[in-house]
Length: 570
Image (tube, rainbow, N blue to C red; front, side, top):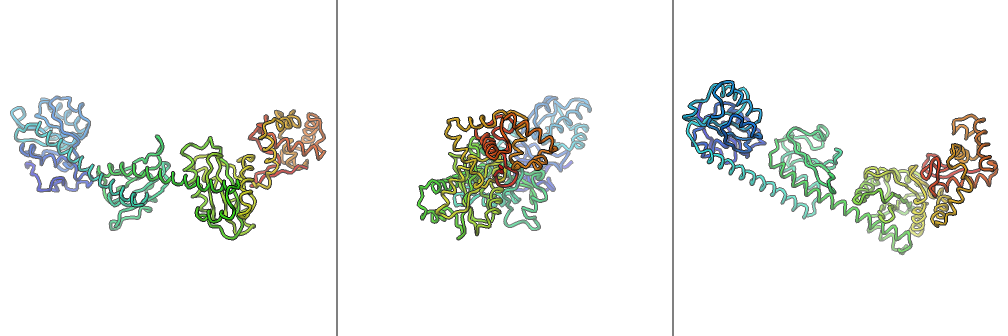
């Protein structure tokens, strides 16, 4: 064996004659090779006896010990200093001693030769080689306390250097944000620092942003190509850091993939700090979106309640970013149960809805009204003939936005087409209809909700007349199995053949059921006035929290699964 010869590398570099192809990710760290170059160990004339190609292993700590069970006291990454007292006298004990250290994944074993141990036993050397454990012998005695002090000082200095580099990146990212930059600029800066592609994704793994180093290394793939090939699975040695949200929630994840170069410990530290900045940026973006959405909601509410001069409305709408053409306006109101929207969920809802509405292909002004739990909108149409198609697209976007925000399907009511002079009244009418409608279909046409709005107004008086009307007209059927038959019969306009097909029963069975219904209620179902009263009672039933099948959330009579509501009572 040749004595270990320190290299002339600058402090912090890894000696090339010792490491060979050392991973770049550990350069600058305190490695075994770096420790052997420190003055205290160099005075001991170190000689590498085994695993000389693994001296690039990082040293986490230095420890001195002389007991046979020293391995039980270690955690891994230590450079162990010993005079050999704990090796044991028999080859079997010596092999077991070295194997236990290798299993603990220590950085290296350094044995000081002397009167107690003139030479290293062959069993120790052979076992270290077979286990790939760096083994170093010192030909001269050195004070172990001086060795540990020097190594620990190097570790502290190295950690401080890492923190300074991470702090520099953090400072530059902060300057970018203060200069008006956002998430993309922070990611590009961080990608330049790591030399690798950087990604921001949702907790579920959906990609939000991607950035690569500039200039890109020769032959490097584009960040999106890397994501398509690897995605959230990442690469071994990558860094993934949670971007915190409200409380314990995770808002996003920052990923750095070692595609172009290995990652160093400083990259993990810098990623943690960048994640904190990104959390502030994302939170600010959501707050700004919520504030803007509230401002647009206040404008629409003022328009609906007549607190805004009609002549001023178009100019104020342009300031808010709404520039419709000369065609009609389409008011839309979405109702969400406010108690189901978390306190910090309105900003997420506003952002998700705006992103979905961007695909509608028509100018849209969307606001938020927290007190009422509503999302009012105005849509610019090119002509009256667009109403049905645009209403369907808008309703689909609103429901998709609510789903992205983790909410149940909302109630969507589409008003009649309007001008600026009539838009306020149509918004007010749609808002009232939204209170009376349900979320059982993609959208409701306000023109077919007149009866439900009337019943809702009666119920809102709170005098019990509506509930008394329901009990008086259909009370005996409220908890009866025949109630669905009456609902289907009225929905089919009293046409018995169609009703039988709807219920999947033969005509005689239907006739028997209708006869029983007539006897229970004491009415003639063929009478038009009776049919009208029964239909109104069935509709009113949900507004008063009716009992029996369907209850307050049950299907309304005369409503099919189409986009509009309306009944046929003959």
